[in-house]
Length: 125
Image (cartoon, rainbow, N blue to C red; front, side, top):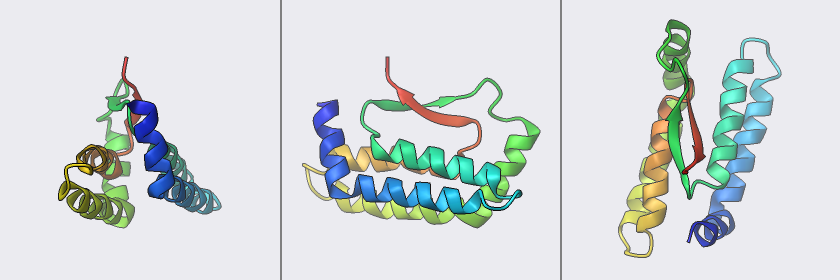
């Protein structure tokens, strides 16, 4: 089911979305100040490619002072737009019974879109 879900996800927008995040992240990495945000955007792009079978995992110290400041800056400039996009898509998928698994993946991506520093999507064991 995980493989089929990821294939359908990639065909119907996941690949394009992931590539868009990766290109945006590379653009952010052009400036020294944007490198941490660019790396998180690239991480988000890779996570967006295949979200089925993955869960949000926190790093060793996800709420350090630096990560809290970076997450605050992220939310102000980038995160809220990405989170709203995933919420809207989740609401659209939530309307149909077939779309429920895809809505669940978008809800999962909202959490990592808001607070990417200190969190990652990893395979479920």
